[in-house]
Length: 619
Image (cartoon, rainbow, N blue to C red; front, side, top):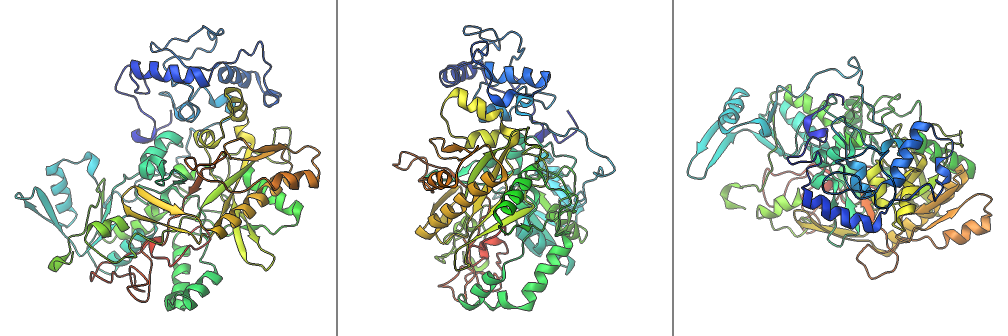
């Protein structure tokens, strides 16, 4: 496997098997998986149409997929049902698809990938991706420090450290402490450090550079995302993605850099009476940010999914716009959600934090802030609550930009669209869904979905169906509906998020989901569907407008997995806003118009949680 950080390459387990499961655990998983994923004897059942026109090597991969089943605790193939001997796979995960698609061997490979037509780029251009760590002079990485080296390295970076043996802690003297290194924290660190302040940035995640990234879905989610990429709301309805790494969300976002829409600025200025958002200062600040992170407005070559979105909109006579990105116009990376291996995307880890470090800021990684200890005993939003702040707006008014997705299958024989679903810029085009009176209802963009994410979202019908769907992975395009939510949630305790849609949110999601399906059909999909639990889908060849509309009439947002409904959906979110919103009084907001706490002088919030409401586009 190519060189990358050891934490991002999958690694070896501690026990007998590479994946780290014990023999007993493998035997238990095998029993479960044997029930729902029996092998399919392809001598008795022809491979589905997706296997046609495949190379001999790919056909071998297909045989691997269709014959795959649970393996025994000793790592030997179980031959009770049919002959697996030619597959030659031992010591592997059982066929729980999202888990199996995540697993890689010591070479960074997975035996299922050939059948999925999935590849990970293994070679990096040393000229394009230099072997440097731009934050090295200012980084102190807790995972490699001892008590003595930590104190020594802090002192070397100009920080006064004193030990308090009575409380078993060290006190670090500085002018400013910034919790979090993402889009807000990174800019704050640079601005304050360049003004002459001694800045310490605390980041609970680790530090990785372009050369460290592996592009592997499993270890990347584990190391770069909050809760390993699996953070559901308390009712299990919404899955939340949030960065937990140096650079925060900017290190793993999909490059979209859209300025706050003018109607939203007008609303915040007039309705919330926040004059900041109507000021020339705010507009100039957006320009400054875009310049520093190298935002470009065009895309030289679009990937498969964005080609589909653009073509479908053009066929329907719908407006389609380019999405500004913090990368070059030629950037063709489909895996920026696992960290940009090309080093082209400009997050805070390669821009604002570099500016901060160049002015003597120190970034302490692997360091989780638990609470603020405020002078005179006055004493992330749970962080403010645990610090004793009482403002009722803290942790409330959470907006999440709920997302539902539609999919369409475009076989390889459709040569109009080049590439695979995982290739090319992730978000390069956007369609705005508007009402008859021109009000924005939703936006439609394209997501990054690795094989495991794809598998985990795919409705379960039977073992054969999931295998058939998986071998179509690379030519299945997804369109995601994103709404500017009016409903809200709250987060009062770390890791426990509650959230509810309102009636208008559901109507807007329905409008976007149906529009997505129309776009996919117009682009030439042979089959389209949603992720509803019953496998909702329809064949498109020769479909009439009437038949399509009848199908669309059955498409609408459902309840979550544990709601008392027959058919359900899982919603997702990658945008968190508003849980510490600005207000002109302490009754209306958790912080004032400058982002300063009403209760604690000198305590500021400077990320998307201060937004008065949802922004309606990638924030």
